Image 1 (tube, one colour):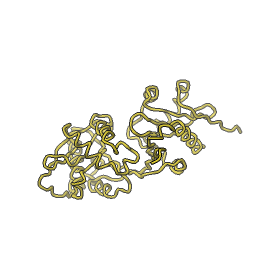
Image 2 (tube, rainbow, N blue to C red):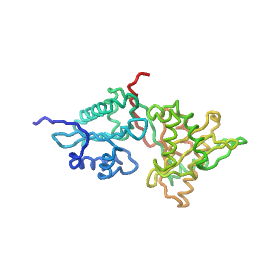
Image 3 (spheres, rainbow, N blue to C red):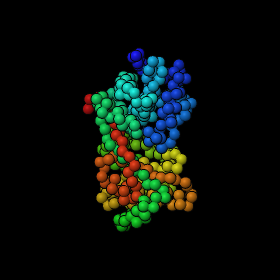
Image 4 (tube, helix red, strand yellow):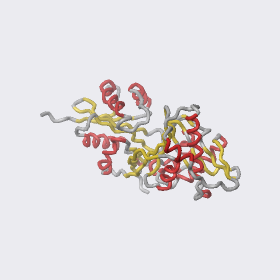
Amino acid sequence: MTENSYEVEILNDQTFRIFKGIYNDFRSKAISEYKFELEPLDYEGFINAVEQGYLKCIVLKENNIPTAFLVYANSVSEAIELNMIHCLGTEDETTKQKLLIEKFLELTDAERQNKVVSYPMIGHQSVFTADIARYGFKFIGLAVLRFVMGNASSERILENMKLPEKEEGYKLVCYNDEFKNDAIKLVHEAFKDTQDAIYDTRYKSIEGVTDIINKITENIYGDFLPEATSVLLYNEKPCGFAFANITGGKIANIPLVAIDKNHRGKGLSSVLLNRTVKIMVDWTKLRRKELSEVNVTTETNNYKALKMYRKTGFREDYCYPQAYLLPKRKK
């Protein structure tokens, strides 16, 4: 029996043609095995993204045939984003993943002096958790929760949700661009010392949070919904935000809920969340927008957030390990 011969290299124009088969195998499993909400780029779109430098792809060839690949990006944020590891079948999967990770670490060695590596191990990728831990990766558990439109139980919970009485001076309004600078400062203060800032270091700086808020409000992360984005004012000054967008198709997302530290402990996050979800439920019932669900993501050990989402009608769908590798520089 002939022993397999593995070769690992950067995807290049000489490999594009023979790479198509394994990439389309990944596309066929993206939703079922990797929990993608939408279909990923088609083959031509993916190759174009690689050629333009938006994505980088490492290919493992087995007897000169591509049977595994790793995709990452290092030019879109302050982190190196390891997006995906996919193997054709499960034969010798651990060895292939090991070779890809080692090549990735070699290629990103200089950048990792100052950048964290972020790797959401969604779906089947979670089987690699123990293996990549050997390279120094650490993990945060993340839970994805969904509010399903038309689910009688969830809509009843939302409708009957007991909210705290708003004290004098508080008012709920929808988002407009006048609130952007306040949102940036508030989100920075709210998230700079949280687990989110470990694997998305943008939360640690005003410049980084500016990038996050701009990408939400300028439709980079999906179609922004200013009417459904709730802003809590206290004496006409913003003290809380619940952002909302449509990430694609009929799926809505709440990417951020944040409250100024001076206004916490009053249940005001629930007030923001309730307004945002109710607006999207009403839109769906009135057929103003055709939404199938609203989803959120939070840490599995953030019990206050989990309780808040459950009280609003959300239910856990699945959990996954968010892996991260800290910069190599000495602290």
